[in-house]
Image (cartoon, rainbow, N blue to C red; front, side, top):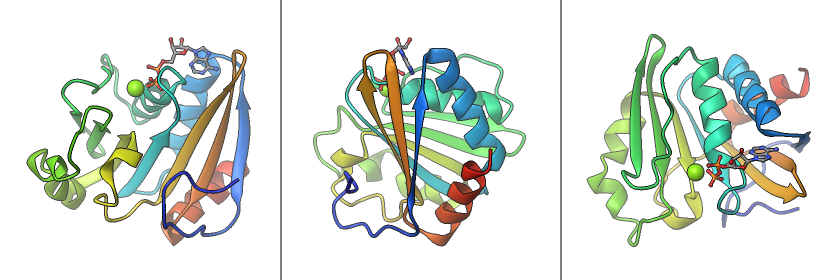
Length: 165
Ligand code: ADP
Ligand code: MG
C-alpha cells in the first residue's frame, strides 16, 4: 500500500494495526504519545468520521491533557499548551488554498511545537514541509485499520517503538 501523500519516501517499513472501537482508538493514541520523540509532525488521513480526531484526542490525553479535545474542523487549528510544550492540532479539511497555512501561522507552530498533528494533510499540497509520521485510517465495519508510515529518521524511531508495544 502506497502513501496517500504524494512524493514522500518511506523510511523503513510500515506498521499496521487493527482498532476494534473508539476506546481502543483512544488507547492507541495514548500509546503513540508514550513513544513520541519531541518535535514530530504527524499526519492523520482517512475519510470523514473514520477516527482521526479520536486518535488525536488519545494522543493529547496521553501527553497529559485533561480537557476537552475539540475537532479543529472550523477553526482549522486548536493549540494546546502542555507541560511538555505546545501541541498544535490542525484540520485542513476546509482549507481552499494551501497558502492559508501561512495565515494560520504554520511556520511559527513548526518552530516551537512539541508536536503537530495534522488532519487532512492532502489539502496542504506539499506546504507542510516535513512529515515525520503518516497515519492513515480505513474502516472495516466498526473496526479501523491504522497504517503508520515513517518518512524521516525521527518518525522511524517512533514507529519502531510502536512496534514493540
Ligand atoms: P474524523 O476526525 O476522522 O472525522 P472522528 O474521530 O471525529 O472522525 O469520529 C469518529 C467516529 O467514529 C466517532 O463517532 C467514534 O465514536 C466512531 N468510531 C466507531 N468505531 C471506531 C473506531 N474503531 N475507532 C475510532 N472511532 C470509531
Ligand atoms: Mg476530525
